[in-house]
Image (cartoon, rainbow, N blue to C red; front, side):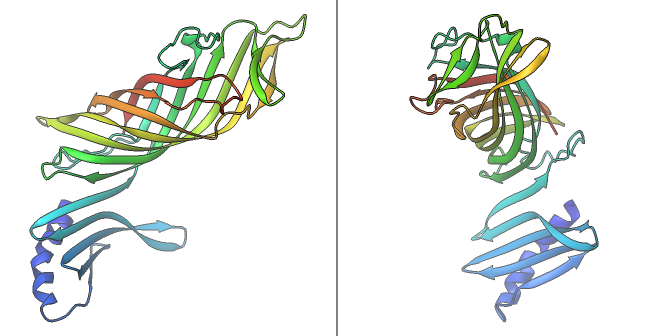
Length: 294
């Protein structure tokens, strides 16, 4: 990989000389990889593609892009993070921190109040979230590779355990927490949903000797919620009390991460209520936990 990138850099002056005579683009193939060089509007753009096989077809996946103009350069890297497979760190470059496995505790806050928010208690030790972030990408912002933008795509599951003999149900147009019919005792009651999350984070990182970098990131995260259910257990069986329940299908989170090498901690807070306005409790999800990056 380093040799290919070095070759790309060496080709820049060649492309500059060639443009004096012709404006044609140049495409090279080296060890099964394609290098594309394009010139226009005062810029020289170099793209590196790695050959991948899918069934009976052969495709080229873009894994690097560099833009060179007036002695300045910017780079972008593309990757699919493979679960449970440790990626080889490149400490001379910017390594984003999003793809990985995370798990943490979650709660529902009334603004900055986490206890008895809107008169509703949760069992904090049994309210949690777990997720898998498969995709990540980055855009380097500084020449020293300390600053960059990180994005990605993850999928997860969130479960809120309700304290007491109550469960969420839809009454009319509103979602409320109500007790069961007489004679029924819930052994547990939960509000649960799955979600897709897409972040945009400003990340700072700095390597520590030959070890993994220390890093911190802060930004926003779009959350798409699906398969919302209120469930309760009684008589030895699980029962669905309601679905959808006026939960906003799209939310927004603020996300902060800190860590070292492959281990980090996160804090996530949603400034927008989980339920639609006037159709449920005014709750703001908040969670914190640990991440194992790969």
